Image 1 (tube, one colour):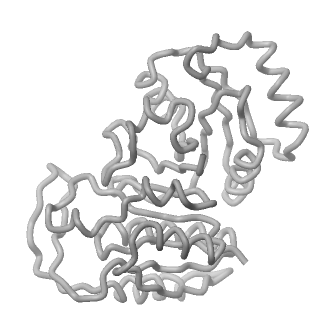
Image 2 (spheres, rainbow, N blue to C red; image 1 turned 30 degrees about the vertical axis):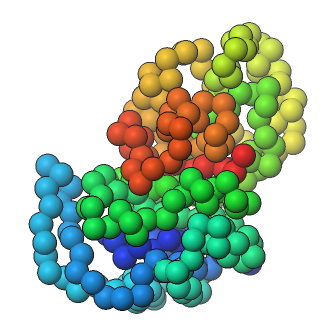
Image 3 (cartoon, rainbow, N blue to C red; image 1 turned 120 degrees about the horizontal axis):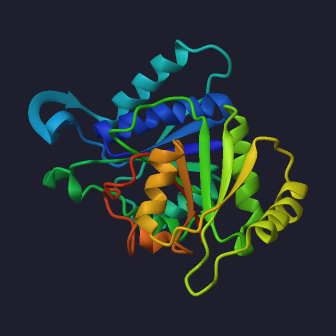
Length: 277
């Protein structure tokens, strides 16, 4: 049985991400483990996305409220109803959290990402960059402004010469849930020349397609060397719904930066699926 771990820091971003995690769990028939970062009730700030304004609503909220909310959504659904459990990670550091993830054989970690992070909450954040270096499963980072929807297209950015089959197979399994188109986007690693089209298509057909049974998998040989332009095309031109990368490999630093912070770069407006290196 698969398990999806949702990092719950008692924020609207966490609630937003948890709702999408529930959709995934229902489709893949996985259970949910809420990793609660705080155990005390507190005042929270409601963020108004339009204009990036903020206001204090005075709403009382605690981490267990998310469990109740997901349970209600679960009860209103048909089909598979995931089990929803909780674990308190308030006193755990990132190494301890990674141990919890590995020990429970988590299939996917989900974390909501803020557009603006109030100063009072910054110290509560999980350093996901540190966690990713220690876990065996991918992490799905979900921007708060992204509208939850069915996934129609995924893209995996890699140098085809070093494309990892276990990642392709994971993405195929994920794509089949909706079902969605899966694109393998080849961008040559730094210092390596672009691949000639027929040669690249041959590698894709022989090394990938022959080892994966999915008729909605496609190949894109992207020769654009400006990474900002390439990412913009993949998100806004090709209308992909999820972008997949390997942590600190190939073009990761060009797209994300030296490490993952509490917020994604402004150009990343869709969920980011990051696999351990």
